[in-house]
Structures are given as C-alpha cells and as structure tokens.
Image (cartoon, rainbow, N blue to C red; front, side, top):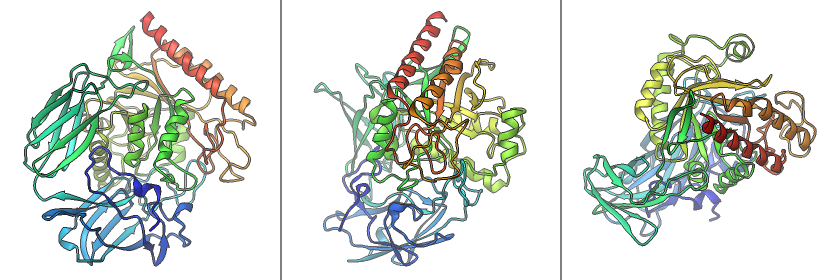
Length: 558
C-alpha cells in the first residue's frame, strides 16, 4: 500500500501515544476512489465527480497484528469533516458530529469484527451559515474561495487502556512554572521533564486536580528562541508524550500607552494574514512539512506573527509555530450572514460605529457559535505559539460581543482577546483594532487600557505570470504592481507613512495582507503555489529591523 506524507505524521503532537494506525487509504466517495485526507474539491484528492451536498464515504480496514494489547480500547479519530458527519463501523452507529473545523473521536472497540471491518461516513455540507464556514462560498470570487466538503483531515486509530488512559491534558504556562491538569480516568499519574543538563524534574499528580510544576532555571519561549520542554505523563497502564513552553502574555502601560508584552517585555506583533489555503490541496497542503516552510518563509522576511484568518488548522500547523518560533493570533471561524454594504463599505468609508445587541441571527446559530468558540479554545489552548484570539472580524456575524468576550476570557485568561477586528467595537476587548487598506495615516490609541493593533492592512496586488490560479478577475487593493520593485516600494511606503510613526503613539502590532495569493486574490507576499516570493527580502528585513528599533525607542522614551 502506498502511503502519503500525512500517513507518516502523528496528528496529535501534544498527546502522543505509542499506538497510531492511519486510515487514509482505500476510500471511495459516492462510489468513486478518492485520496484522503484532502477534500474532494482539491486536485490532490483526485476525485472526478461534481461535489454535491451529500457525501458518502466507505473504506475497509484490518487491524495490524499486535496493534491492540488485550483489554485495551480502540479509538477512531477524525481531524475534521465539513459540515456534519455520521459514522458507522460494521453497520453500527459510532459517532455524529457537527461543525467542519474541529476533531472528534469514538470508542469503536465493541463494534470491531475479526479480520476486515467496514467504515462508513456520511457527510452533509449545505454551506449552512448556522455553522462556521469562513471564506467558503458556492460561487468563489474576490475574497470568497472554493468551498471544502466532507473529510479534509486525517482519519486514524489508536489504542488506549480501558483504565488509567491519559485522555487529555490542560497546560497553563508562567515564567517559572507550568500548571498541568490531566484527565486520567481517576488514576494517579507521574510526570517527568528532562531539563537538558542531565537532571530530571519529576512530580506526581491526581486526575482532574491542577498540579503546579516549578521549573528550575527556566528557559523562556520567544520567537527568537522557541524553547520547548518535553514531558512524559504515565499512569499504571498508560504513557504519553507531550511538551510545554514557559511564557506569558500581558498588557501594561508604558509612557501613557498600553503595550502588549511577551514574558513581561514589550513586543511588536509584526505579522501577516494567513488564510491557510494551498493550490493543490485547498484547506490542506500536500504534506505537513509545508507548514514549516510557510513559517520559515515569513521568518525569512522578518515577520514574527501569523494571524490565522477565520480557519482552524490541523495541529501540525501550530506545532510548526511552536517549534520554529512564530506567534499566532487565532481567529474564531465566522458564521452568520455577511453583507458587503453593511459590513464593509459603510465602516470603511462612512462610520465604524454600530451596536450589536439583538443581532446575530437564529438562536441555534448563536448557541453553536459560542460552543464552537469554547471548543476551539479548549482544543488549541496548550500551544504556546498562540498569544491571542479574534472573536468577530469586520462585523461578520457579530452580536453580544461584550458578553462573549467575558465568556471566552474566563476560559483563557492568559491570552488577549481582540473582540472586534476592524470596526464595530463595543466596550470590552483587550485590543483596539484598526483595518486600513486605503489612505495610510498615523494611528493613535483612544481606548485606555487596550493596546492598539493594526490587524489588517496593505493587500497590494501583483500578478506573476504562470503562477496565478485565475487568469482573469484578479483581486487586490490599489493599482496592480507590475514588478518586485513596485510591490516592495508600496509596502515600504505604507510602513514609513503609517506603521513606523504610529509606534510611538502606542501601536503594538501590524498584520499585512497576506502570506500568499489565494485563488483570484493576488495580494500575497508569495504566489499561490509558493514558487515565487513577490517582494524584496532585504528590504523586508530592513523594515522588520526598523520596526524593532522604533519599539525600543518608544519604550525607552516612555
């Protein structure tokens, strides 16, 4: 059997158990072969049919010899299935899941047969706006992209003991300690953390009870030095590997301005918008190593932050950022209705003020959105790269934002929440956000206690012949740049006219749109296929250096 790169990658790096058996091979979709884990719309899926709303997947598998020790349980995992999924094993219902961006699993031990087993999945994707859907659109155009349906992340099996399994970990870092909360089914457990100098830090804990672990001679995590501590957690019957980092995210006033701080020191989020789309795989690249390459491409241009835009990625992405030192501002995935005039034209050119009480559509939509936000925080909370969250972007689906800020802040008090990105700000948020795509101007914070964040800007377009997904109807902001020099000069001018002079006035971050072209959008720093860098590397590195100097000077003067 021929395996792809995703079959060789353990999909849950923060809770790694010895048993792992990928199930991405041998699938059919509506009776035709398909290559998983890619969605049927992606070229890598190799699926020739027209994608409808109902997707029926089938495969068969036989457990490898010795995979399951006696009295262990077999768990079936799905990385993500868009939008709803029903799962059967040998004709027995195994799982049902709603929402297309988060993982789910089921214990299928009692459904298994000797020898071959049949696995069926029925996915339904109507692109309902009651569910988070991000940038997907049935008629892709402009900032709206090809929809993704059905299974779009890996399917896999693992074995875990019936008693004493390490079911989950919750890690909360500080500067000198990490708090560990483990679900081990009521069993006691032990922790072991190598300190890198031959010493071993050990501790004993109880299931569900927070355990504070003091780390001697702490080595802090930063983008320049992304140090990770490995950790083994063991019960009498189970053992799993994990990792953590020591770092904090806070805000403090310096010179009359709120400044975002990493490990107590002011930091500038010098970032790019990352949509997470790939030309050959759409929502999923050809291999998990492509996430490493994207991170390194941006670091090579001097950036230290990615704003993950209205999409939740496989954990491979966050693991790459953890290991390689890239800060992440994670957006919640938008649901609800978007209206171009109401949500973009009026706030861009007329007024950025609007109330949000009583808005938000159906109660079903709102309840699911809030649950999905909480589940997203719980799913990604252990990744040290994530320093903040975006709740609502440009008014899209926005309602009761102050209440939802409080709800999510209680779930994750150690990070900042940008309640509204761009406009329609209400009272409660950790950040004051601006989006500026036209008419660069010096910015100054006006909301005491909230740090100023230019969370979208730029978006200058440059087509590179032979590397565009659509020959016509290309999309970007401003007049088309014809050369690398023109694009670089426009980016440099924006930083000189707006970003650099705003840092003394309290600006703590800037997110340039965007990492790569996406379908008809040609406003990336790289082409959609990642084959061509479109701006001059040396100039971009000089911009990053000037940003760092401007921050240091502003802090010194403060």
